Image (tube, rainbow, N blue to C red; front, side):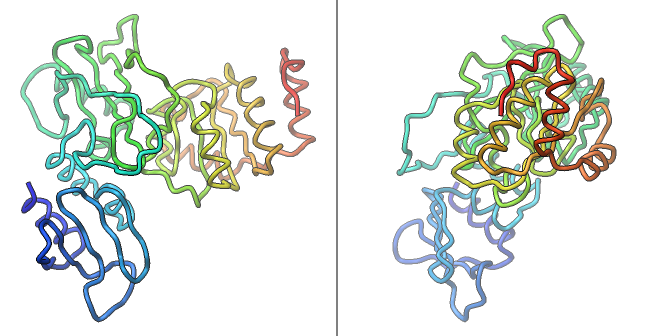
Length: 315
């Protein structure tokens, strides 16, 4: 496995690594600084990496790949080497015991073409939702032909370390039970691996919405913001947030807006009326986001008065 990782790193970093005397340790030219010596040290066994000049570092290669803007194919290749459920490297400074979540044992990658009818229907369904081939690779999408998630596409979510923290199972034949998700808490940060906390964030309801928006979007896996995400928003001091929820979630959107505005966050409520972001597509969504004005006390009160259950919303 180690040599495969070294070969992949050589391509991602566009340089050749030099093995050190210490086992599994390699030095690379750092992409973070211009220096006459190789200063990026990587342990290909644990995944830990550190630049001795810029002080950039992380606990696994998913973090490094994100920093250097690795391609979707390169992310996919990394998953193939270290596994799909979680990074095989140990995170030595884990602060809390994480809930265990694994992809269904029947999970099959959509990146691998297959002549089965379920594979073809899964791809057809995703295309009908505006999902591209690049999206399939980026989010490591798959499907199941048997087991509890039979005839469903599986869309995983990975945390900042590249470990699986949740997944969504969507029926591809439009049965009565559209979604079937793992029996674990939704108190996770959806698609955290791809989030840049220094840029404006978009909060939306589901995974298809986040993928359609494409830019720094976090799916809530519902209509309310969970504790872990709320805590991280404050810890990262996020300055600007767009809330994209449909009309039947307007009350929840206003409650969330009130909480964020109290903490000095610029809030933009993007009303969707009868359409979801995944229904209208990327170009339309970007236009709506750009044309949305910042919410202030006046616009908040106007929206509150227009909502039947306004007495439950306070600022």
